Image (tube, rainbow, N blue to C red; front, side, top):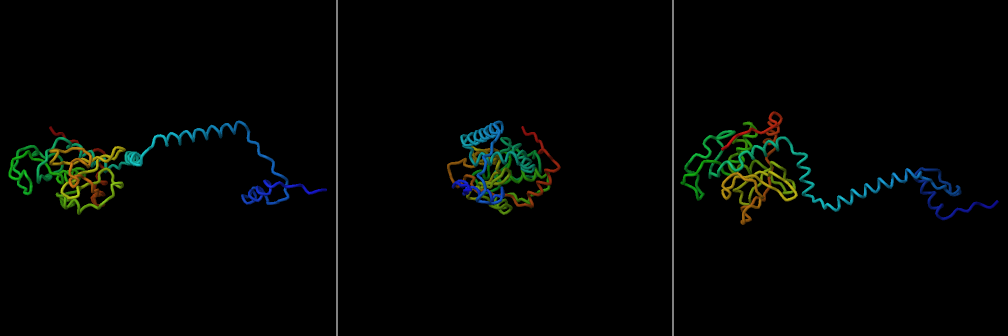
Length: 259
């Protein structure tokens, strides 16, 4: 009786399936019978494949940017202490004037804000003039952090000028920045707080002499590159931990009413 012929395709496929453990390797085995998939199952596989390809197509056509993905991530994972810092800062937006040398005297509302006061700090064009009392850029940040912590953080912890704020923080790449981080200009004499990360870019809330009051703007808010906020930093862990502890107690920031 003549030996059964084994075609080339069979010779190639048998060792492969044997390697996968589907059946014992035997070159002389009879040709493999084709597997018949029921029509209903075939239609289901086709339907699922079509759905998957449709979703991929939608994602590709939307051209979702890395910045947008990062924005969505931040929105979903905004930690309670970040929310506390952000919403505390926003309560002074448009309400407290810039005052050269203005520092926080207490947590919460300072009744002397807005009252006429002589500028005593030097090295500024307003020195010696009478201005509505308020805060300067570092005073604003210190007030936000101290108030958000409900007094757990004080001037000694965070400092009251940009030099001490720099010393109490560590540098970051812009891509690493989160809401609540600090951002400085290249000269180190102006700073703000990261308030938003969106597909359109990063926003900061700060108290600028140029703007005159607390405002949320792009970090690039002047025509002078050295004045724009481009140097990102994160507060030291000891400070953040105190904010985290406060956020466990106070789910909402303190609500102050300013005229």
